[in-house]
Image (cartoon, rainbow, N blue to C red):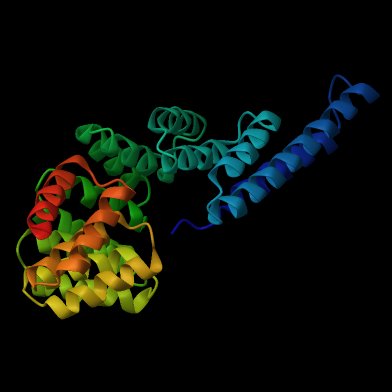
Length: 298
């Protein structure tokens, strides 16, 4: 979703080079020139660590990515994008307080960095601070009205508070700005599903899957919508595909177990529900699954 921000980094390096090359008005000692050259080298090395962090983060190795961003920050403490990217890594690792602290620092260094506001808004949403989340997404959109993910992120907050119409409006805008991004369709489909408009939800999940055939969440959501409309065969196919793509998708096992139980496939239902519990089903769903297993084993 986020484009690699090259221009700020290039500007940063060029500015440092020009500063090093400029003729000092007062101090012209070799030591001062050497200090400027070292500063340029430090910024160059910081950018290299940042770029390696991007590559590693995209591969899913958050620990190593954080190490690279930390190295970049140690070399250049004013590197706003490095704080922003480290914040995203912390958030993906579930360390929301550390993420927010880094987003704060990125914003302090670059108050125009819209991505940092919407990233912090996501962290606030996950902490349940929904008013703060909306305020951050509002600010991101004000700074960059073309930032599609900020609309989608704000839509997620509206969905969280049950304002599905406003959520859908935001998802519509995100899709208008970036119609090739599958997650936006999945988000809108989930909002339609929450309103009971299941056919519209399925249409959005279809589009998400067409754009990204390996998108496990879209198959899961479509499977759930199919199950709610008593299309058990389609639901089982979708949930099976979600599990094929992501073998640790606990909710997909749980829902497939329920689908099997509804059509009398007792052994398959038991297997899926047991897998879901073993993988770490949430407390409420676990209680239901254990009750259903007890019934199935009788």
